[in-house]
Structures are given as C-alpha cells and as structure tokens.
Length: 68
Image (cartoon, rainbow, N blue to C red; front, side, top):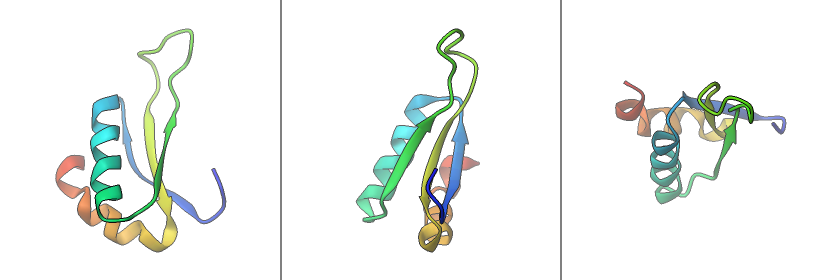
C-alpha cells in the first residue's frame, strides 16, 4: 500500500468490507479494499479497508459500529 495510508478495517467477510467502503465514500473519504484471500483457498485470508492517514480518526469513528 502507498505510504501514508492506514488499515481501518480487517475482515474475512467481503460484504462487510463493501459496507465499510460505502459508508466512507458517502462521507467523501477515499478508501481502497485490499483482498488478501489466497487463490488456492479463497476462504483463507482477510480483506482490508485502507484510508489516508489524515482520515484515520474519522474513518474509525464512522466504522466503529461495523467493527464491533
């Protein structure tokens, strides 16, 4: 991942990562989803949602209910 970006959510569920992305983009916070699943065993690995470090605090706050 590019420098100055941080992971704000790690999940094994693709729907949860997509919901997080939608929540952040609705607040005009740019984000990316990194898929860490292996091609051999797609059920192994996580998806990560990353934002620029300037938005880490607000992104974490927006996603707190999704994370818990």
